[in-house]
Length: 155
Length: 372
Image (cartoon, rainbow over all chains, first blue to last red; front, side, top):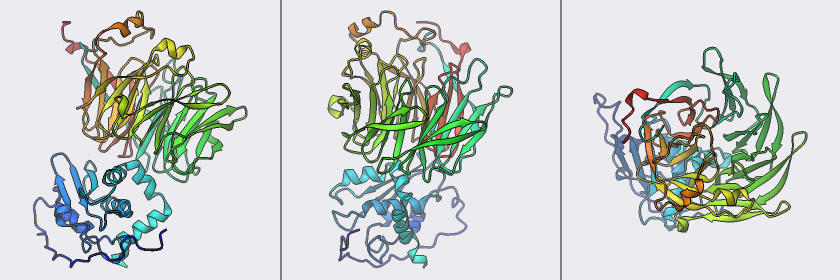
């Protein structure tokens, strides 16, 4: 574990106002709404700083795109700095948080925003290798870190 | 009987439920499924267990006969029966490979192979059952010698891949080992005298190779062709000269024959070549696809190719076509497809949805198109 933070001075943004979804929306159950997904992931805490991914602009509403017909979800996130080594951890957090949130046949692809990371291709490859993701989540240390990022807001 | 003229259907016979997490691999037990011996299948899962399923002679349905648990402490990624069927080896993310023996009604873990630094991803027995190969995320391939009394001794640790090794597979007839990796290459390993194993060929992007992780490889019955599948959304067929392979010259070079692209739009996790010549693929779009060689009949009884030498004088390289696509074969990614070697045209598939499905390839005789 590195002693110094990778990015000691992140830029922190104000939380965006949340829009309440109408409860009597007839398509609420079948449709996979990108904004609903965003609601689920926006508060994930950054692995290094006591701020949410939304506050650090790692994620925004535009991060999520859904293709209902094909059953695909694409999440694009922007690490706070070019050499962020926490990018894969953020990817694990996103997958773990979204695990049971939509129909089983939906496929989730996670990528870093183009140009936002020095090893973009290598990071994207690792983020989308499900065997690597599965093995990482079985690693107790990574598991612990992911749990902290997902549930610290509830503590 | 030409595969070009016939139509086929992949009929779902049964769904095997029981695993509590995704099923990664399935393996048919050799020498079962014919002559009155019930077919047996092993499956392994993210639930850390291995299940053994047996087909009932009376009803034809598969039942779970054993659950191999409390041994692996993490996901069991793949399983492989020894050629005699006496032993079952299982590879796990817990960095070990366990070897099990059927004792009475149950399976007993008779040996644990340690050495890999982290997740073991694949195991393969050679044709005679004298060697076992394993590979994993530590980028290495290990070769173990099978000794009497269920003892295993590591004879070589092969370095060469620059990334996670996804699968190892011995050649069906010769002691030549193949591995495929996250580094996008396939490597061929042969022995140069006493336990001196080294890489004799690397099939990389420059040799018409894959441009992303290669997940699996499979040989045809004669061992002169190999199919590989990848995250680059293609299947590739490779060939080598049969006579050179058989002469024991480990360096019979493999050449790219054909790339099947445009058929898959998500990662292809598994590929398996049946004894009859049908290539099955399992992919992350929940579908199973079957391919066959153009203008070539099913290899029915005698696997030897009369006039096979002529193949190499033909101007056009063999081409392959899609025989059928089974959409929504599972509710989630298909991780493994395996043909039974019993000649019963049964196919087993394993999925992230936690189930295994048994399929039968049926020929739709009534829909036979008139010969051209």
